[in-house]
Image (tube, rainbow, N blue to C red; front, side, top):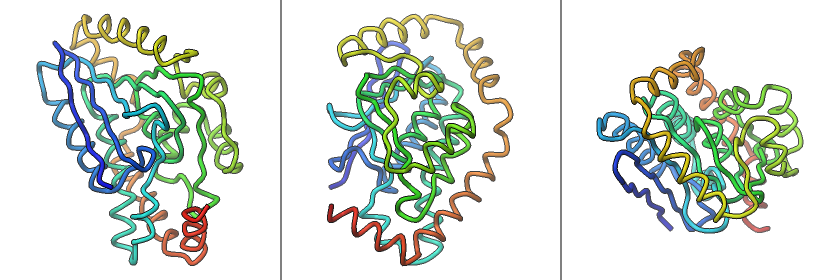
Length: 251
């Protein structure tokens, strides 16, 4: 059941793909690998822009691995697991290369956080989003700063406080989570390919300076996201969350 991360470099563009058989969900080992991959590409002077995508025609990302969440037995393990998403988001925001998201399907929880941490996004009309964490006794605490930065606190709260409701791609576009939405994967990929090639032709120094502007005011995330991870790490140990996770697995 292990997933993988792959990198394809073409000219000055790197495409990072992640895959997991459980709807592209993330175990902690894969979160760390994605963090390391983004960090290393940030240091690669031959790369100007990064495309982040998942494999397959189904979900873009189902968030945290429920199997691994059920295995958490103490605060240290809980903190470590949720810090994985903090690591990814911090790596994405601090990466000196612009990161363009390719979203071909639904995203839940941490998957929404990854979308929010992209600098620009291309998606299909089937790319609905949902923050389901409250329903299992935790909350989108780690990813909240990234999501709220894109769509605002009110829209983030709307998603969080109705954890069973999907928001469609048009809603996500109207709120600013998705930038471009297309009827089909083919149309999305055609537009994305044209865009990324144009973007990668621009002055890398100008793009880097623009990236810094985009993420101004997030310097406290180096501490904030890990403080939030501690909240989730504590809540995941509750009987409520353990029972809810088991019910989700059975359904």
